[in-house]
Image 1: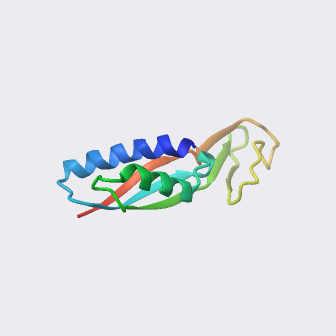
Image 2: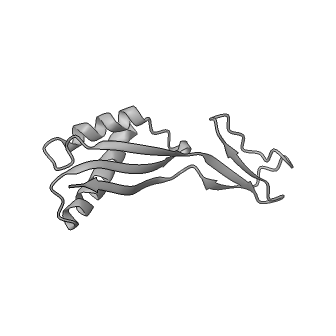
Length: 115
């Protein structure tokens, strides 16, 4: 259900920028969303559709680019990117748990397609 509040915030950003650029219609919203966010794209679109009714973003498509989780070991410098959700929060090389998150928590509107 957290998708509803997130999509509300994204819609506010979209409408603000669309208005600044004199848009008549928002056709698509391009997002970068990190794997740690647990956002389900289908639910995000459903809530976005619900919130955009009777706005210039009504019918806009969400294009979601997933960003994988990447961590760097602060002890040995090993960098690991997880291509699946089989995450481990210890370094695969030295077994340290002193890791720094490099990517995977993003939630960014990268562009908006308008008319």
